[in-house]
Image (cartoon, rainbow, N blue to C red):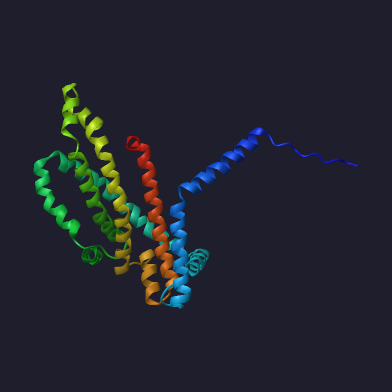
Length: 274
C-alpha cells in the first residue's frame, strides 16, 4: 500500500505564520477600545432602531443601511454620487490647501499683510456656510465649479490660520541661537520655522477634511445633478432612511480614512513629535 507522508513545515513558514498571528493580535489589542466603542455603538443603534423606534421610516438600523449600500453599489447608483462628490471635494480641498498655506506664509512674514488681511480672514471664517452656498450656486450655476468654490472657502481659513500660528509661534530663543551661528534667513526658515510650523499646518489640513466634506454636502443640498448630498436630500424627501444613512455612512468612512491617512503621513514627515 502507498504510504502518505506529511509534508514538513519549514521553520521559515512557521516563523511567518507566528509573526502574522502575533502582529494581528497586537493590532487588535492596540485598537481594542476603538473597535469596542464602534461595535457597542452599532449594537445600541440596532437595538434602538429595531425595538424602540420600530420603523425604518424614522430610523434605519445598521443592517438595513448595509443592505441599502449593497443595493446602491450593485445598481451602480452610489458610484455616480461618490465620483461627483469626490471630484468636487478634492479639487476644492487641494486648491484651498495651496492658497491657505501660501496666505499663512504671507501673513506671518509681513505685519502689514497681517493687519490688512486679518479682518477678512476672521469675518469670512465666521460666516455661516448656509449663507454662502446659495450665492455661489446662483452666481456659478449648479455645476461642479460652484461646489469647488464652497469647499475651498470652507477649507482655506483653518489652513491659513494654523499655518500663520505655527510660523509666528517659533521660539525666538531658537531663532536667535541659530542666527548666532551664522544661519541665513533662508536656512532659519527651512531649518527652524518650517519644521516648527509643520504640526500646525497638518492640524489645519486635518480640520479642512471635515469642513470640506460639510461644504460638499451643503452645496449639493441647494442644487446638484448628482453627489452624496443630492442622494441624502432625495432620500430625505422620500423618507428613504436606509439610503439617507448610506450616503452619510460613505461620508463618515471617507472622513475617517482621510484623517487616518494624514495622521500616518504626519508621523512619517514629523517623526520628532513622537
